[in-house]
Length: 80
Image (cartoon, rainbow, N blue to C red; front, top):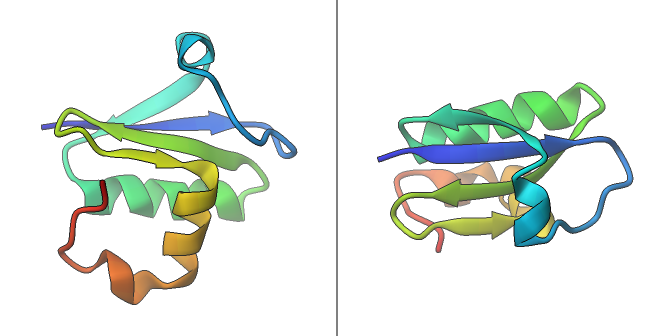
Protein backbone atom coordinates (compact mmCIF):
# COMPACT_ATOMS: atom_id res chain seq x y z
CA UNK A 1 0.00 0.00 0.00
CA UNK A 2 1.27 3.49 -0.74
CA UNK A 3 0.06 7.05 -0.28
CA UNK A 4 1.19 9.99 -2.41
CA UNK A 5 1.34 13.46 -0.88
CA UNK A 6 1.16 16.21 -3.53
CA UNK A 7 2.76 19.56 -2.72
CA UNK A 8 2.40 23.02 -4.21
CA UNK A 9 3.03 26.69 -3.57
CA UNK A 10 0.89 28.78 -1.20
CA UNK A 11 -2.32 30.03 -2.78
CA UNK A 12 -2.96 26.90 -4.80
CA UNK A 13 -6.54 25.81 -4.11
CA UNK A 14 -7.46 22.78 -6.16
CA UNK A 15 -5.73 20.56 -8.67
CA UNK A 16 -7.17 18.55 -11.49
CA UNK A 17 -6.22 14.91 -12.06
CA UNK A 18 -4.24 16.00 -15.13
CA UNK A 19 -2.23 18.50 -13.08
CA UNK A 20 -1.16 15.79 -10.62
CA UNK A 21 1.18 14.40 -13.27
CA UNK A 22 3.10 17.68 -13.19
CA UNK A 23 3.29 18.15 -9.40
CA UNK A 24 5.90 17.07 -6.92
CA UNK A 25 4.87 14.31 -4.56
CA UNK A 26 6.38 12.06 -1.96
CA UNK A 27 5.24 8.49 -1.39
CA UNK A 28 4.65 6.83 1.99
CA UNK A 29 3.76 3.32 3.15
CA UNK A 30 1.19 4.48 5.73
CA UNK A 31 -1.47 7.16 5.95
CA UNK A 32 -0.05 8.28 9.30
CA UNK A 33 3.34 8.91 7.67
CA UNK A 34 1.63 10.80 4.83
CA UNK A 35 -0.14 13.05 7.35
CA UNK A 36 3.13 13.59 9.20
CA UNK A 37 4.71 14.84 5.98
CA UNK A 38 1.63 16.97 5.23
CA UNK A 39 1.97 18.58 8.67
CA UNK A 40 5.65 19.31 7.95
CA UNK A 41 4.89 20.74 4.50
CA UNK A 42 2.11 23.01 5.74
CA UNK A 43 4.35 24.26 8.56
CA UNK A 44 7.13 25.16 6.10
CA UNK A 45 5.11 27.61 4.01
CA UNK A 46 4.13 25.22 1.24
CA UNK A 47 0.73 23.58 0.79
CA UNK A 48 -0.32 19.95 0.81
CA UNK A 49 -2.71 19.78 -2.13
CA UNK A 50 -3.84 16.15 -2.03
CA UNK A 51 -3.21 12.73 -0.57
CA UNK A 52 -4.03 9.76 -2.80
CA UNK A 53 -3.71 6.15 -1.76
CA UNK A 54 -3.68 2.82 -3.55
CA UNK A 55 -6.61 1.84 -1.30
CA UNK A 56 -8.85 4.51 -2.86
CA UNK A 57 -8.08 7.24 -0.32
CA UNK A 58 -8.41 10.64 -1.96
CA UNK A 59 -8.14 13.73 0.22
CA UNK A 60 -8.33 17.33 -0.97
CA UNK A 61 -6.37 20.28 0.39
CA UNK A 62 -9.30 21.34 2.58
CA UNK A 63 -9.89 17.84 3.95
CA UNK A 64 -6.21 17.53 4.84
CA UNK A 65 -6.17 20.92 6.56
CA UNK A 66 -9.29 20.01 8.57
CA UNK A 67 -7.81 16.65 9.61
CA UNK A 68 -4.55 18.30 10.68
CA UNK A 69 -6.47 20.75 12.87
CA UNK A 70 -8.13 17.81 14.63
CA UNK A 71 -5.37 15.20 15.02
CA UNK A 72 -7.58 12.96 17.21
CA UNK A 73 -9.50 12.11 14.05
CA UNK A 74 -6.38 10.63 12.46
CA UNK A 75 -5.73 7.89 15.01
CA UNK A 76 -6.09 4.59 13.23
CA UNK A 77 -9.07 5.50 11.07
CA UNK A 78 -8.91 5.61 7.30
CA UNK A 79 -10.38 8.64 5.61
CA UNK A 80 -11.92 7.96 2.19
